[in-house]
Image 1 (cartoon, rainbow, N blue to C red):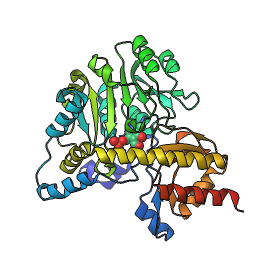
Image 2 (spheres, protein in one colour):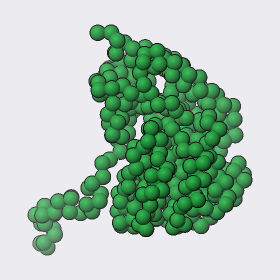
Image 3 (cartoon, rainbow, N blue to C red):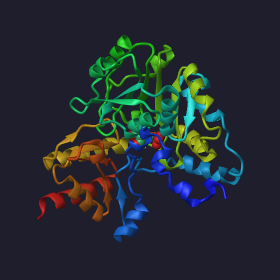
Image 4 (cartoon, protein in one colour):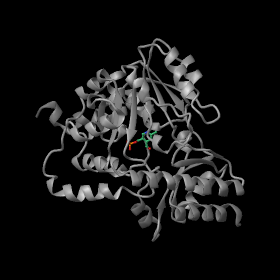
Length: 378
Ligand SMILES: Cc1ncc(COP(=O)(O)O)c(C=O)c1O
């Protein structure tokens, strides 16, 4: 019997020795629990999930119809080039389809970017806290995370600029930022491009851009048209209500998209996602209804939270960061027992905060009622 065929040979190795220390240092992303699981665990009939910033209205009916019509063709591989969707997005943004890449969620494009643009020892600047996947993907590529603390819950662009070194390769700008819901303004983006060395790529993650009401929100597409080193990431997971299908896209100059396409998995975006995204793009009414729901929900929640003297961060998105204080963990657990899933912000280093997705009016009222009862009746 050869050495490796004896069980002992394998037992001499521990899993830790098979992977790099960079991987072992990664703290995994912990997604919220699915509704059905919470119902089963806690024996609840009704559970509302306000934890992952999904669209509480659901998907566009046009998307659902398109999926039904396409279902009998799922034995075929998807269109690996995403021809029709890229064409439609290019038309919407007055660019060419070569300026667009589709991803299995915008998540996938973040991981393609870090995989191709980061080498061991390269530095990646990002807000702290900001969307957790930036850090995980940077570490996976052997890059060094340079976290820049937020200032008044906003990304601190001037500090980001000051932190640039010859090793800096990427700057992540979540605009609006998750978990704070705040934005970086036009002037700050102008400054960024004024002082930025040409060897750095900026990733503008605009997952929630459709909800932004502030007129000073930058039109980053103009910078793509000017040929700058940036990529804009957008998603169908949020306002378009297709989170379960996994589809997002990136917009950049052709050279950047070309690099990403070199090792993109050939069928990374499935047919139903492409078909549903295409149908959603044409459903302007669903888009308006979704925006209106959030605008009105925001008004109600702001008013109720102020009345209860609970501090919160004004948001440009479909979620709100709320300061629930030292008892946050107990509050999150108690809300869960009452059938409301919200996100405690411990993993974002904000242990005294929760992040609440703005729901339907009924969901928002239930949240406020239960929060009031937890905080004020004892
Ligand atoms: C800022 C930000 N970017 C990206 C994503 C992920 O989007 P997708 O579902 O397209 O992967 C999220 C999801 O919560 C997010 O908050």
